[in-house]
View 1 (cartoon, rainbow, N blue to C red):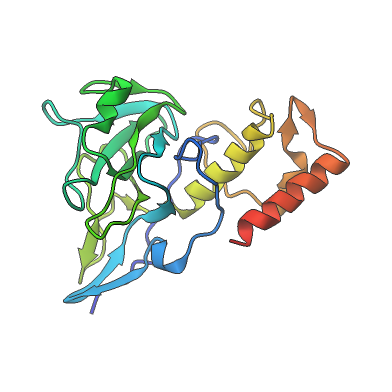
View 2: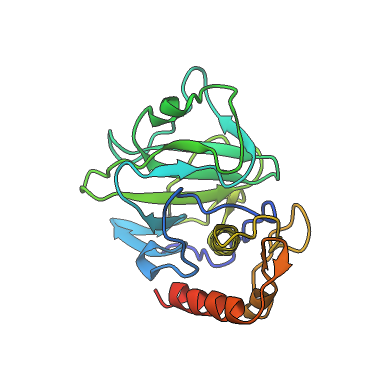
Length: 232
């Protein structure tokens, strides 16, 4: 019987991470089958240690924070699911390592990346590929500082300590990104730099748009949008 996974620590990075898909629809809730800790059965019990985000083949994946591409020798790709779905790891300056999975092989080179490359928040990293089953999605995992290898499954044993739960981190990224898309790139959702906090409904009226506090119809619009995202 597989050991429990519910005690895995939540990932914490910078206070303003971006949603990892350039033009992707943000979401603050995730389907149970695509969530962290979702059970899988194939011979023995195992868990999903990332989160799957809907995407189309060719969609651009972007860096959630500033950091450095994790590479080995002359390649920056990690093995993944099949010949057309590889993974990249980025060591963020905040200390968090983010894995971006199921990318087209070599697509990072399209954006001028390679061994030793620095990446900036929002910079393109690659393009979504296709799993052997014919599906396409972004598979995102988070790890403790210094992690060099992906670890897609754990069977019959607890995950190692470097594995972190990305759920709250992605929720924060969704809210930060929507605020910036609305024109409030100068506003902060997190409380302080280098700290990832879980946004609450009470903070939504305080989102900054164009450097000013949203009032009147602006608040109603934000609230309505938030309700539609969480209703997915």
